[in-house]
Length: 243
Length: 243
Image (cartoon, rainbow over all chains, first blue to last red; front, top):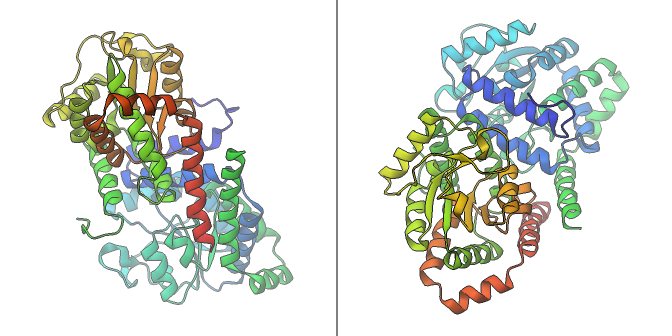
């Protein structure tokens, strides 16, 4: 048990959840090392939501609320860390939820769907088709889900898939702690923040969204500026350490 | 298979080795996420040995060659990534090799020992005793190994154990990609470099060491300066990205 007054409590709980999820088959081992990469960047970001990340989260809410067919794409790490937060965001934004895995097996698809269902998430079901311009199973998604979506939220996505979705003309929102990653650079809206901090902020912004705020956030959106702000945040952490 | 002309070939091979080692029981899931944290820092360091890391590696060789009873402490990640490199360093430095695990079980001790043996590493054996001022199995080590060592190389170590070894009056050399970690800040010599780049450099320096160089490196050693140089290296990567 991690004492709940530990200064890095949330980070250690998330690490434990990922390890448990590997043991239960929801997360692959590669997912655990990807989580570790995220942890390192979060540490450098000070493990809190920066002003620019908060802005990115409001902007993500604006795009989701303006969408005709928003979809949240959920992978193993996202399901393990944030099933309840996904449920709340889906409800607040009206987005559908589709399970989409990099290391796809039927067993994992079922385990993750069951885990999400038990948290109260309705998951799109159907026969996946090769709709993304990618090789292998990474091309698979649902025609009525990601296939038809105009706005897709893909937390913790890999670079190839993010690029493919953007190339298909979709508005892609990602949550990625590495501001230098290909996903971060490619997405329409990049939220450089930890998943379980980011999702409730997006949900709150969806609930409070007005047509005026929505139009203003979309018009003013500048993803390059958001990425620069995240890099500057890391630089500040390093500068503090060097003092 | 990862194509060997991939710009991040070494990093991807290491990631795959760790995943395989989790599946074979040598590395625990927590080791995979720790590896991911290291990867993120290595990415920010440019995935190459910096001038200050090269200096740290030479200094580590000087301390190992000057030691009466040097010991290399090997954990699951180190065994999975660098069994051959450990063998070469043990031979070049005259250091003994002891397996020391954070998540200690007899099955893992045996699997790691067998893996090291098959790479040609002689591993100290005996009955571990609670010699470190720590709770639980993390206190265990061999009286004739780490217990009696004057210089200990502990790659990829956790902060508590590093502190305990320093508190026992030992010279502690660590290899840790996070220059802000407690281990990095606590060790006598901190090598901020990736394990499989660092170990052959230390081995080469051991082979080439002269009494003069050894005395000069030890006298001039300044760990704070090495850590600052590593932080500055990360700052450069970020500054380049912001250009």
